[in-house]
Length: 316
Image (tube, rainbow, N blue to C red; front, side, top):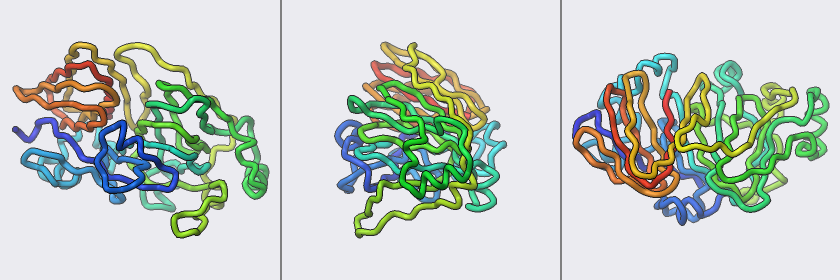
């Protein structure tokens, strides 16, 4: 195994109160936690790093691994970022998440010491009738926003959007949103963990305390314009789900096999969201199973994936 070989990652797990058990039962996540709300599949964030699962770098955090092989493994496009640029999660929302907002880069850097959070969601599965909230129904003033928060009517002024398996949502920083109950998501986001809660359904944490809200910060960092969104299911075996300044995301449905090219501009992240298969690169074979996270360092090379499987491929 050379230092440029693909590696399999073990995620960091989060047991937030709204989470369920589907990541364990449906996506082969092995955790001692009773609830697995999120698995951080590709993460170099201080709040939870993924770990190299096997090979000569087994047991290293993603940051330690990159330090060992050199940051050129991120690719030349990563020079636009001060640190590892993205974070990829699987999310199991058994209950609804809080109504929340993430700041943009300028606000987050000034107030939180990290970049903001633009993200995208790919709906892996959902209950019949599941929905989420996405931005405002119409332009709203800061006073109207504040009044809706104080009166616990914030969801009345948000777009309530039904969701279906295969839907894609792009959520720019500043968009007020909430993932509803009964939704499984693959989330690709900026490498940030800054969230401002606006409304939390008066819930209590495991110690009986209400979770903190961040009203001032939300008022200062939310986009108050009417939001437009698209939640149509995208068809095709190889399609671009999202392309923005922070990441590009493709979905591949592999029936037999597909050959892919990687170059020195960016690493590749592969999340196996369904099925199983094998990855062939440089004479090596890596078994792929549903729920696996694979990192391939930037390099001029080709690799082949056999199926049947579905892959979320992310790069810079």
